[in-house]
Image 1: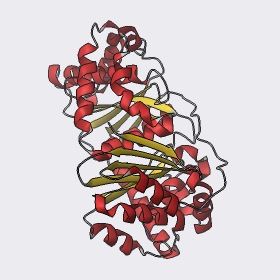
Image 2: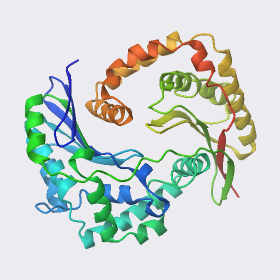
Image 3: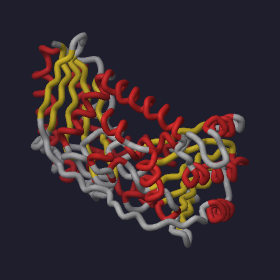
Image 4: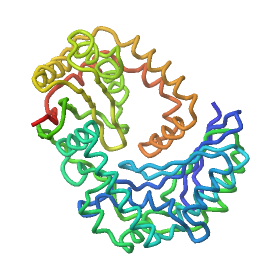
Length: 396
């Protein structure tokens, strides 16, 4: 695999994986996300992410969208705990356009008052949408149970916090965190590394002061919470267990555990809850990790009178993970799955970014090697149901 990495004199990091198909996926990220926020700031990183697309000194909001669209490109952005990022997927011949546009957005966003008020309203509707979507709602409530404030609060913030942010608040936080030393530029596709480096040096020459805030080390906790709501036909259950982060050496053991325990229709939870007992239709499991936290998560939609039975099954299956005899088939499954995931350059783009934020982007290419080092006892050690959390949303 042709992979290149370089840190420029201005402190900016460039990651590049070369491919033959004449397409590039390109992302620019700043090392600032919701995990850096204090309680009264909750939602400000996500608000800034939205405003990146709402006009710069040289482009209106409409021009940003039209310039990408007319070149056949796709775009989006996200706010994680450790980063805020915008990405574009576009034909390779538009490499310079993409780098220049991302530079313009990350350096020159204007935070127009009228656009800001429109976006404030849009984010409040996003909050309403999450509240009215049971699966999203129980996971947000679960996060509050598993981590102390402010880390456990939703990345979108609250209606109160959103309405408290002034234009000056957003500009101040933007200037504190959007500068070259804080940036990671990731490119996956057909391009030349020397050209990427030259363009990065051309369009990211502005310096900035070192950041004075830090990614929070979350304080873990656990708990149980039930909410009642009118008009529900199902009970919605979320389960959470604290797990190794992306920075922990146990992360590979955690992935093997999660795959066997909860991910996919062959997992123990899916087989026990849905296939053997018919207690639910939707049974979803996932491993959520960034550089400073990890969570093993499960969502199940069931009937109210089956809730306690489902909870009991989950905890029993956690304990039974100490009894598993083989992890070699799971290792091979994960290695093969990674091959399929790599087909989409956007998957590679995001994984390289989070590997870099968590330690070293080159670890992405050592996945198979590190996975094969995991021993059965390493997985057994994670089969500990202490400090678990449950959130349920039931009908009144």
